[in-house]
Image (cartoon, rainbow, N blue to C red; front, top):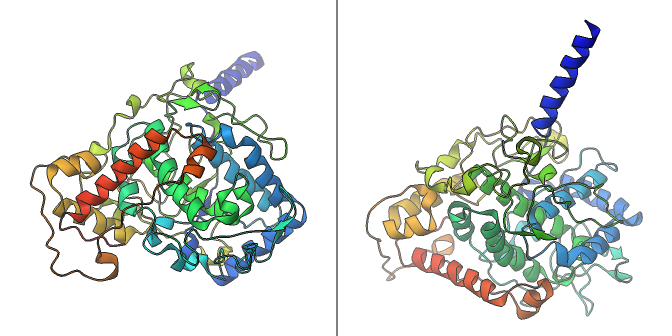
Length: 457
């Protein structure tokens, strides 16, 4: 009898192991940085000061710099930075158990980034000053770091006292809807809003050791949010295709790590699905984790596949959402657990049963306006090409008349900036692929501006 019971327990354990990581029993919620109170920003500042005193801030800067060539320009970009920001968050929570990295939805202020309230004295701080561009405001004001040498943390806006316009939310929405492989989505994100924010802020953020600026963490938390939205939209939780850090991408690849910030041999698959294993967080504007671990992982398929058993991502966003603005159904609490000092705690994070996402915006009201505006303004050929998640349709483009222009958010969308030659070289990007991605982004903007579409942003 005891032998039979033991065999049964072993069999159950084997089944559980084959099904992949266990679902988290509780999850913290990463909130939009724009929703944090001055007191919550001050709590973050206190943790960062303690971490810096202990050398942790510079260790993160050094590790990112040493791993730089292995975690950019390939599909490992997303899983590495997911694990990297999570490690920062976990270490920060040893100083304050309520600490959670917020995300900065930078596209919301794409027209005039320097005016974003997140870049205020209460938040990340504004531009650096003096000849050394020392950051003299915000939660890291006058912080001294030690890598690669002793210096004041720097900030140097790319247009003097201002930052040039960067990528509009609609461009990123198009990527979420139309990119059916992770390798393509990674390229479009890395060549667009990723680089635009780094270059716009400049200073520390324009170096390999950018992680010393907390702006790095909130920026990459947002890119992680966008990846999670893309994963949900295409039901592609385990898609990992293209080239990884050491050759063809495989879920069993070890995530590159540095001895100063070790990951203890974590694999790519270990971070692919939020809400499972040790990845116990979600986002206030996104879907919670799937109810069960997706099929197709290396544990339950016996293969280190690239498409994660999800129809190669060909579940195109065409089928993701044919209803106007269905993102409004997120039942979103906006992560407002206000008494929770950063809004974390042990929420179950399951704030949205719908998996489809058709907009990059964290503002659910603007998502609806964006979706409705595009559906009502663009012709079928443009929607089918750039915004297939809104449903295949027929109809002609409704062209804008430019005699009168509304102010502010209704103005034509500015064309996105190019990456600098220095940035392209620093990352080892293929200049032709970067130019192709930029041309595609400009075509999205041109299509929107030539229609009757009015951006809510």
